[in-house]
Amino acid sequence: MNVKRFADILGADFYTGVPDSQLKALCNFLMEKYGIDPEHHIIAANEGNCTAIAAGYHLATGKVPVVYMQNSGEGNIINPLASLLNEKVYAIPVIFIIGWRGEPGIHDEPQHIYQGEVTVKLLEDMGVNSFIIGKETADEEVAAAMDAFRKELDEGRDVAFIIRKGALSDAPKPEYKNDNKMLREEIIRHIVNAAGEDPIVSTTGKASRELFEIREANGQEHKYDFLTVGSMGHSSSIALGVAINKPGKRIWCIDGDGAALMHMGAMAVIGANKPENLIHVVINNGAHETVGGMPTVAGSINLVKIAEACGYPHAVCAEDFETLDKELEKARNRAELSFIEVKCAIGAREDLGRPTTSASENKENFMEFLKG
Image 1: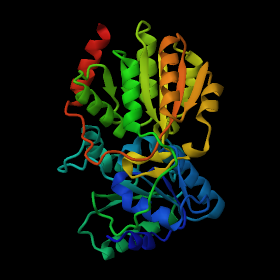
Image 2 (image 1 turned 45 degrees about the vertical axis):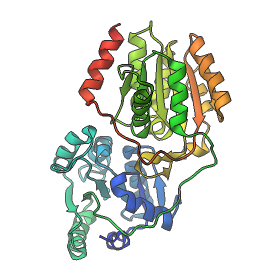
Image 3 (image 1 turned 180 degrees about the vertical axis):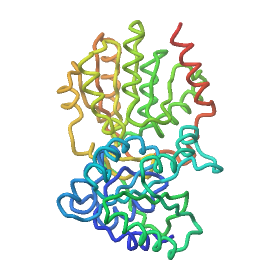
Image 4 (image 1 turned 180 degrees about the horizontal axis):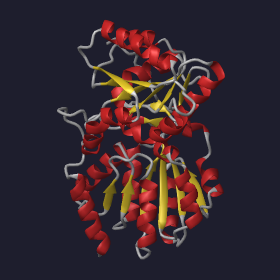
């Protein structure tokens, strides 16, 4: 379906969400039409965040907003759906656009399999009627579904369009870039060299894929790494849990800016607990690169000052490899919690592979290594 036609059928003039590769056509359309414009388009930190922003928009305007997201974000919207939007509470109408990763019968990565199975059921359980759009869905079918949805929206109920892979088409192709020089894969290579045989917890997306391939290229085992292939935003909390319970091991967390923003409260908890054996590295390219490159707000905020305010005793920023290597060495040799922000360019190898071990194998190998 042509993405502009889809937007015309929705008839909304405010969108907020978290980018998704399944919705890349919509995301690029919104960036081409609005860019980042608080009156029309806001990229949020997480799906609950954008649901609340949408509620505020409705309260201020009386109009119906659109929230877009990957189905992995359904968990983040359950609380505001049930206790804010629901017709038994404030009856705030929202149109959800949900990318269907892990659709049954369609091959996908392991972190999407169960989420894909329960995508429609979760919406049903929350009282949200949905309509599925695939490649073969006619414009007239979508328009008819939207006409039916308008009656529900008028009564303060929420609705959802579930988007199958490749269902939206004919999007513009904006170029996403920044002025940073270091590539993430090379940054991770430097971290791996500094970490030696220390355990590493890596974040969702291309960072974990690159870490896996670096180990392969080095001829190293994968037992040192816990690859957080799903659960975006939680790698630093996983690393905290490991660090507290393995005080004799130095734990490294390779995080991303989008992930750090998604659950930034984790930094406050880490800073308050101050594990002496944790090194938290946030690779900041100011983009949701893994799902297409749309910007995050991390390009315009100071993560170092945020870390300091959260209680990290050491927080620095590295913009070149010489500085990065020096700061990695300092962090490795001190017995205090450390935070390193690394400014990163947007881009990855086109032939970047994916882990060839299963998630359960990764977990078992990592746990066995931690016992040593």
